[in-house]
Length: 239
Image 1 (cartoon, one colour):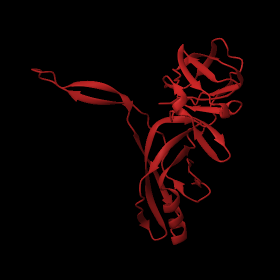
Image 2 (cartoon, helix red, strand yellow; image 1 turned 90 degrees about the vertical axis):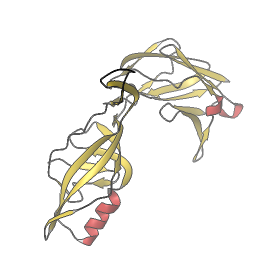
Image 3 (tube, rainbow, N blue to C red; image 1 turned 180 degrees about the vertical axis):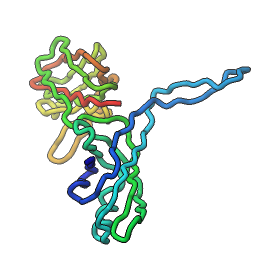
Image 4 (cartoon, rainbow, N blue to C red; image 1 turned 90 degrees about the horizontal axis):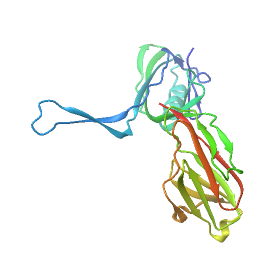
């Protein structure tokens, strides 16, 4: 039987029954219509952004006691990570809409769980590759079906590091206090930072160039500058 996990809520452990098989949707780029001057039909133009997708999980609550219903309302609400038993290797960034139960018997309620899914499906265990020795072009594979926005970590002992991804340069200047400290380049959030205690200290203002992207298939990466350790988290994802 299908089940799901949203945040800390596991439908199996909570006694919620998923009544229909769950298959996640896919995502497509936004499409707009326009008409040429003097034309008689509307043309379609594809944009660069991907639209959100919708998913409904049909479930039933055998135990409709107030405590059970309140816990469901609390747990399946707002933003969180959604994991489906039909796709165990991936997770979805989702928004859960307010729940509206539909009573079908005195002791059971049916309830549609409506989610808005942000692009894309993300790897539960993404590929992490050591690139410490990548002073010449080194192959990095993106096994997803859409471009990836990786996370790159490095520890530098000099004042500057450049990362070349498919020959595109991304440069980071390192203040003295950051030399010898691990630096994180989060390409999805487009921020460069290091961790001090429990704080994330941004040094994005010391970075130059476009944040690296990995296309589907084989990519090539190298770095220059004095680096004692470096790795790349591909963070592959799927349409």
